[in-house]
Image (cartoon, rainbow, N blue to C red; front, side, top):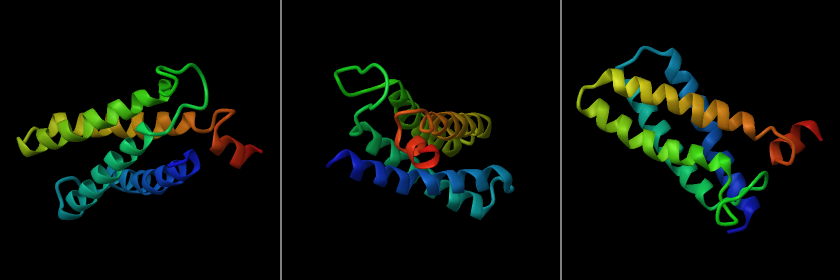
Length: 128
């Protein structure tokens, strides 16, 4: 798959994940809607993380001529989603909440912020 296809697939999963994640932050926890949106959010975040594995870094230094610093957020996501799921299934709400907040901040806000740096598609799209 070419980079552009991967990028649009990534945007198609990460944008709804951002929407659902934001909604989840503000609704009452433990409700059926929280659980339903949470499942969708976790699937979207996992899919978007897998997509990024195949996206070559375009900015900054690269490991193996492919992975950049932003790929650390891929690792964060692929670690946080299953461990948060395990935590909530064990009834460990505190750990689940911590991991989900960390995932939202790191995987969406910080990583998303990096996509607006010069040399990246969203920077070009929004700032010319």
